[in-house]
Image (cartoon, rainbow, N blue to C red; front, side):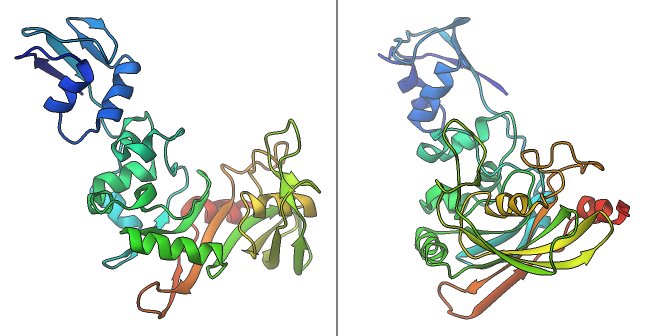
Length: 303
């Protein structure tokens, strides 16, 4: 969305002029927009410290959020109270933009080409940002293609409490995955995971950090199984790396299932259940989200 402004008084810096005339955006965010060429003065791209003079025309390409409609966002809500929001994250939704500009200026989350959870929260739950909640309230993450239960803190106190619960492993997380082949009925993998020198993907390696996951087969077919996975530690990509280590990668995994036939439409991993004590009432809280339609349809298509 383009916004056109006329300079009424001389100012020593362009970013200062924008900060004065555009509400809802921090100076740092506006400076970043200028650096990306989204601001022109009399038709020319200039630097943030360029002075502006009376009568000049400033044109700004403001970010248009590709956010979900309000109805879409509200359909994700599993539970909400004054301090906690629990969502059923759809597959394909990014958690937040790359880089750290969104941490310094949360409205920057809306500047990307793709929608993301941080942007959605800033639009549909702006009180989270107004409360000064770190990371827009996002206390843990799910990979972009992973669907399922996700907790969001609505204020700094809740954020600190839930973050501590994750660190102390007081969060009981359960995932469902469609894996290639049929693993043992129950098994527990205790194997360190991390990145080996020169490699990007996370794998089981003696150079990694300790990680432990338990697995249980819920249902099976000739070529695949529906598995319940419970990470007992909280390493990045832990479930995916441990299942690949077992020789039963998550179907559709771009790192470990590249040549698998039949091919899945996406990573077949779903955060099924999250259980913990409510950080302020102390009562047991359990949230479940059934796997989405694409997950069910793919499982149904397998023989």
